[in-house]
Image (cartoon, rainbow, N blue to C red):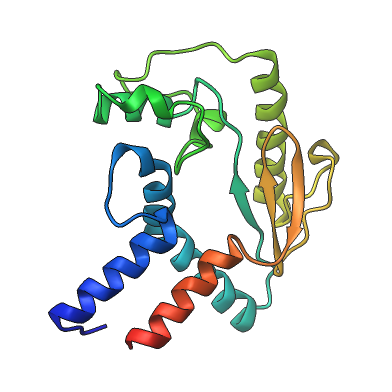
Length: 186
């Protein structure tokens, strides 16, 4: 999108207003700002890719939203490292990009001390590992350990303390907002 200065300012204000309901950024709106960064960096591209695969490939597409959070999560170490004076206030506020890796692999990062899994962590990790290995073997992640049927193509599995399948796309209101912005400013 090629915009002049005034259009960039209008677009920026619309984005800020949509995500934060405020006219400026502050520490009070960091969670909403992270939603914006998530949409720009991951969700919009993931949805476009998912749609292209579904429309142009014959193999099923399985999408998921990782919502399980534990003190072992990558974000529990990176937030305080990135912003020592404020990072702790965001711990436990939700899963972040890459947090699922702590459920699959042991970290060799020196900044991430080993924290033993809780009983809940073990239960979740076993579910997730089983789904990943079944998918690697068969191309379909469904297994009884998930406790739910993970349908391909037109929905996603929310992977949290309880796994739930949802029809539709991730964050439909946010997706609709970006479609509106592209139409308006293109």
